[in-house]
Length: 195
Image (tube, rainbow, N blue to C red):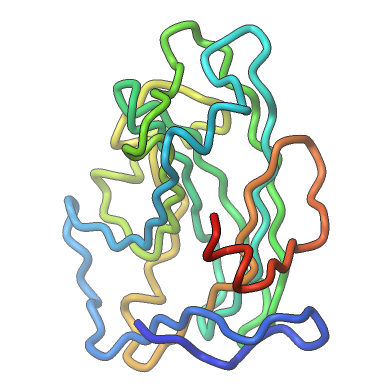
């Protein structure tokens, strides 16, 4: 995993995260999975009102590029509530081509699903890059449900992790309240430092 200057042209990004397969795994065991995760603190998520009748829908957007085409899965996991989750699949249709992926995440109004107002992990965003049959044998949950491992990564393509020198790039990740993706919010370094 490294920082790269490979970015989508004309979008304002200076860097991306690059994942490079140095040793291929062509035999993914049933209980294996390979993920990239970012964790969001609960105190930063209170405005989504998760677990109430006024819960907000969210929009997740990001730019992605890979040498390997096929179906990939991204998942949001609620770490405070029996790991409730919602998973969404997207297709990389053209190798080595940047594409913007946008998902509308349904509101979670389940009364037991509030996120603690603390600095612990409230939500995780999980990008799946390989998954064995223990994680892919069910039905992909496209709305919030209690976490069932067999449902989490249904349809996930394993050719990426099975190919030496395969690359996966990610940049411009943005999670926002509402049902449409806005342009990426570039913030000056001093503002980010202050936050």
